[in-house]
Image 1 (cartoon, one colour):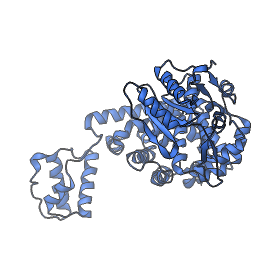
Image 2 (cartoon, rainbow, N blue to C red):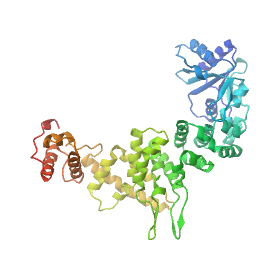
Image 3 (cartoon, rainbow, N blue to C red):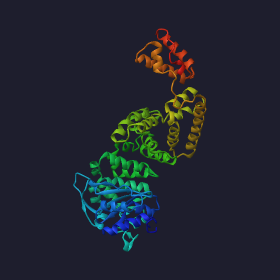
Image 4 (tube, helix red, strand yellow):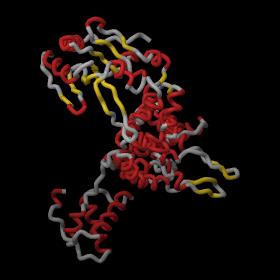
Length: 479
């Protein structure tokens, strides 16, 4: 692996010039240098100077042709400077000390060596000089380049102190291992496991941010195995940890739902799933431990785990401080419906059953099918191929019914307003019952979703309920 080289951008020369005029030794430090060495794209540059980082940022801003606005964060002693090529954060070199009850350090000015020593991992303690006498020279006090070559995550100093001071670094260690497919150094990993309880002082938002980055890694199962084996998962997401294990009674045993879930997650990644489809993979079987029962004749069952799991989704999202809007509803829908498509394989399945799935899944139908395919994790290759062929059949049925009935984002033409005006009703349970009965008739194929036909059926429903004869709906022509 070659030593990282500064990109040939005039910007870095400008920073060097401004730093020289202020007599502030300056360096590009951290992830940008690491990613240069790994030949990974990166647009966030951290510049550390032995001096006042805000003053340096302002001096650089004055020298740049378009005079970009410098954003100052005075409380943190940092400044941000956006440029077309990269976004740069400037900060003065510092040293830190921590109190046991907080991961927020007490910070004071320090030397370059003290600044490098406070970094989380050796691969993030690399620097490139911006000083005239050795411009572009590598600064590597802790053999970060060696650890990059060895594909190892290691702390610069005593890992017990590093993790106790800032426990979020435990999550970051696992996140970098998952993102880069690196190993965690044995001493560093042992310290991580010893200090796992310290994660309790970290805010849920910061934990979830790292968890999402692990989920978005190329192979997230690796990160989750490290979380579980270290004991961190049991503290930050106990419901997922409870999926682990196989219970045997006589001849009956079930699969390990923890490792099954990880395989489904990896399968979704291969299929190009976004963050929320990956969360659906994580949660699709989350209620299996709560619904597990032993039937002496057929073995272990998990009846209703999809419905219970869907009911749990809002609580899990709340606890993890995940968004509670459309993203949560998407995941909840996918968890609730993940067993439904396989039931459509039988030749005797009616169009009505297909319509209902299309109606309930809506725009999530393609993602639902991706999750269902990912859920096939048998070691029996022939069984996997048989299931995949079955899903081909299901998708063909879905396509045929969708082309005929256009049920994505389907809305009945008869609204509650129509029902109330027709029968002179106020908002009530009776209105809801009529609406539901009409919807069922449309999904069953008894009535087309066209106003005249649906309205005639509504009048029949009203008559059956003993309602007064319906009146023509005054806005009918606009329907």
